[in-house]
Image (cartoon, rainbow, N blue to C red; front, side):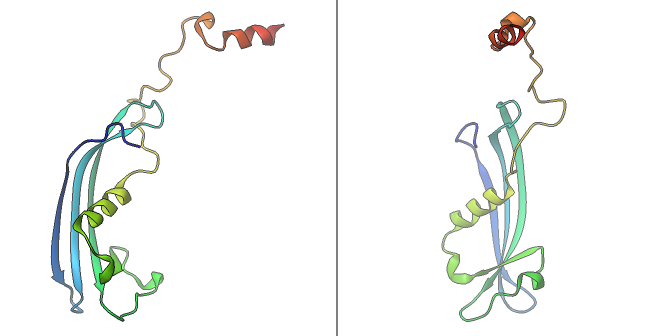
Length: 131
């Protein structure tokens, strides 16, 4: 969930071949994204920095088993690499936190409590409970 739908994403893609001669794309993405804090629902400026290595599998080559893959790389069929914006979008989405929130102590959630129970929206419930 974005706090506001604007911002700048910087990225770099570098194509090469690895030691086995397979085509590789090194992807680097950096951005500051305005997210919604899940505690206070306020603005959270999340700094995203992500580096990935994509090994492209051509033609009839078989993708390696999940247990055999290098955890620092991702294998993907070359025909699925169609657009630079798709690659950058995937990296941004993979780099976002599941439940973004401010650091402990800097979040404003729960810091503003009503001064008087009468000011609380639940004051009527308290009266009902007493009777």
